[in-house]
Image 1 (cartoon, helix red, strand yellow):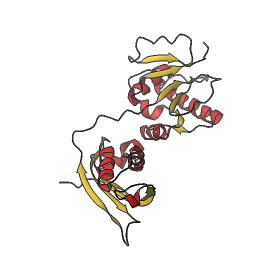
Image 2: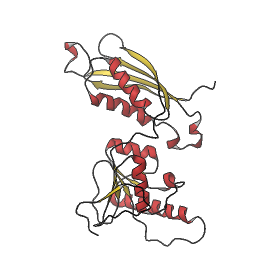
Image 3: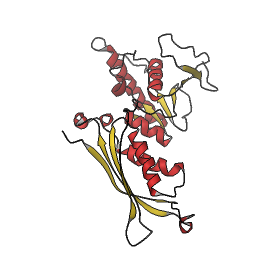
Image 4: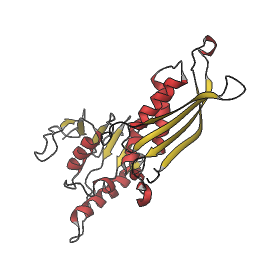
Amino acid sequence: MEQADRIHLRDHVVAADIGAFQSERGRNQRLRFNLTVDLRDIGASRDDQVDSVLSYDVLIYAISAALADQRYNLVETLAEKIAAEVLDHPRAAAITVSVEKLDRGPGALGITIHRRAGRVSPDRTALPVDVILWSPGMAPPTGAAILCPPAPDLPVPQGGDQRRIALLALDQAAWALSGQLGLEIAESQTELDAAIRAGQPVIWAPTKLAADAAIPALPLHLASWLADRLGSDHVTIAATDPSPDPVLPQIALRPLPGAGA
């Protein structure tokens, strides 16, 4: 049997309030984390695309999310929480998690667990996010939001793959809007997920994700498609009458508060 590819995070040290003894309560102590993940898709990184692999950000996020969730008496419970978070990713087949206390004795005291994924997870875990169909004059949003740029007012060459040309024009519009608003561009699923988890707005350049999607290369269609893919239940648009196009996915559209026609 071919050996699974693995990714790892080593010697990641975080201070946290943890421990069952009274002397440990109310004071932070250093924890060292080592994570090794067996991947489902052997050789998935050969195309050199970030969405083909499990991002290292997933491992770091699993640790920070687990520590933010509650105070733990046992490092064993913390390790289980981290393992479950990572194994929820569809590309994670198994994980080894080591959690060590560095301030409880002359050496490192801790636990190492190994867990395998159960059923294959859905394509992705939905994260709370607002997909905004951008309109000139709108103020930059705060919090987790994905901005879809307006159609650029540029001459489009005739002939060739008109849909791809239109997508590339939207990419150009995204980069122009990025310079105007001072926001980062996100092209891949990994970049979008990282921005959502960090609660940061980004501008979506659609060509990489939507090149093969069976939808028109129009901003409203793309915004609705992305919202559905991300698990969002709405698209925010700058219009007084956000009547959905009948060919759009069945997704609620709502106007941005205070937006004009």
